[in-house]
Image (tube, rainbow, N blue to C red; front, side, top):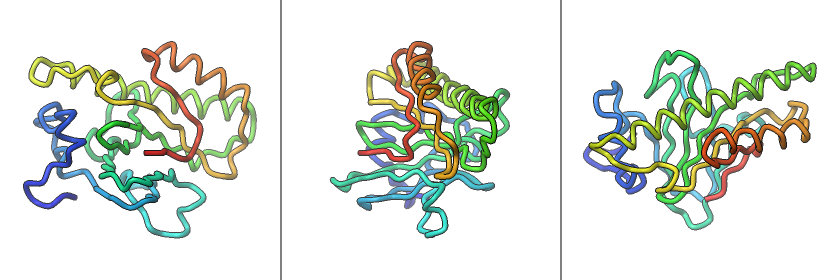
Length: 194
């Protein structure tokens, strides 16, 4: 939550309040802000949020912020955008120059190669949905921003430390994702560097 009347520069730069006008709760009622040099972001049954709990370390996305920029964490699925057909990325972490969509699959097991591929495919689809929604909302005539040209957009699939990694599959998905999403990158790293 933000203090009343305060709008972070990263939110202003993308005109997110205008782009998502009419959403309940609104953007400013959803966000958390931090200037810490390291931030743990998690997704739980409530929403995507900043955590300080040590037990979240194995399943979180770590945002490294050495310049102590103002980092905004925006929960999407379960908060700003609820019950969207086809799913939605869990959240985003961003500053004035970088925007990272986050899809948490930290509960996924990945016991078979089909299960791993299924987890990755569903996550990529949810990230694409978020990217499309933001691109559409921001290009609206009231906002008139080319989202992927205004900021460096990247999408992250976050799995737990115990999830089996398949680098060939990941590399193939990264290529296919970029080709399908105007060059926007896909990462399987649990870290975002600002």
